Image (tube, rainbow over all chains, first blue to last red; front, side):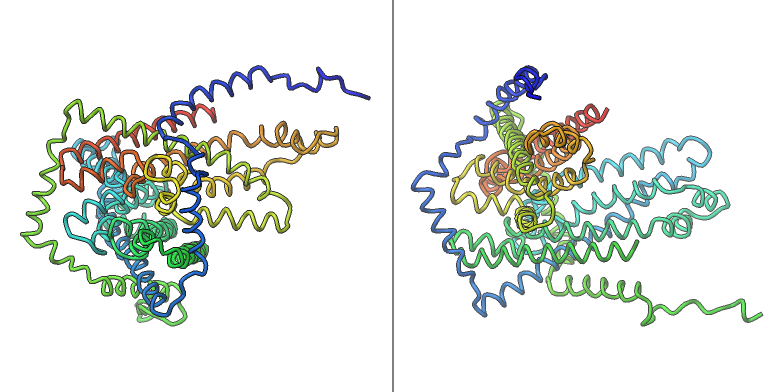
Length: 275
Length: 265
């Protein structure tokens, strides 16, 4: 049975056409603002430079000395991330204890008292400010204060991740079953005791799993921080790119992809083991 | 009587997996601090704290003269445009790459997944630094960098969404004799569209943060202003740019949250 042309047509075509043209009109200012000129990529000058850079990727640099340097810088990248997360924990744990509503004694009998409420809101605000500044900006500021080197990267990760960990820890602690903690507090346990014997055992697996996941993210961002002078793989990649040393860039990209994949696997395995 | 007073378990036992795990983590942390030579104690001394205080004091008050605020607003618009256009391109590329990646097992699927993973695991900033060579300084390189990295992320998420879509409506259309393109457009796409939109909006929130700092390597937007004024030690102007970044991120978060609520209503 042949289907006639009208039946084959999309019944909603008019609306779709209208939406598409409205989207194009909205898109135009974006294209102007971003100087979106893809044809520039295909100009002979640009093609030649790109071709030469990409051509120099092969063969990847595999000299003994270079590989040794690369191994050292890769370790530094991991070390910056690890030290940063360790310091972030030092920052996040006290702030979490201060921000968690589940540990409030005055909230046991109805509403939280005014002063504890104000303190908790202030700590929350501090956490929001810490994490909404990108770590790269913190690194730029710290490079000015403490000079070039891994310390700037470690401090930047510590501040941003301290904010993120503190906020999420507080959310995890508040989402669990509050009854055990409340019972402990009602029977005269101190807030720290209530945390260690009520809240922590319930939520330990989730807290650890989130921390491991953030460590994986920190490795990724510690590479990026190198681009502003915080040491590690990123700094080497930046200088090799500025010298158009494609072979070195290629090796470093491979190492970087392998490092991220490894951290990904390790963190997934750890989190599975935690259940 | 004595049986009730059992000894506490030993702190370390070779059969306890958690003990090994904790020991490994402690070793990693100690090795990190030792090998980095951070001299963190030096920062805590009175003199360097005072110099840090002076440095932070220079940020105040932020430069709010209309001429400069105008330039910051222009930078913020550029950042917003970069993130929006980058995310949009990434969504289109992501759908194109998700189609082969969500096929039945085979070399095409495996190859596409490998490509998506490679695109995804190189950060935006590294892409931008490389693209500067062919696209030149400015927001265009930043937009492309965002699009490339995000297309890897979205491609993978989209492929999973398409794979998990219920096959019934597609099979019904196919039984009526509709071609592959029509089956995708009229059966699969309408089913997964809300999920795709929600993923795309979520990545937009991430990308506005990334776009704000991409300028640090010369790829336009607020980051470039930040780098410029910080390089000249004009801290009052730097403070204005930082405030603009925070406001922009908060605005986009709010807009994206509202849009997602409206979409999933």
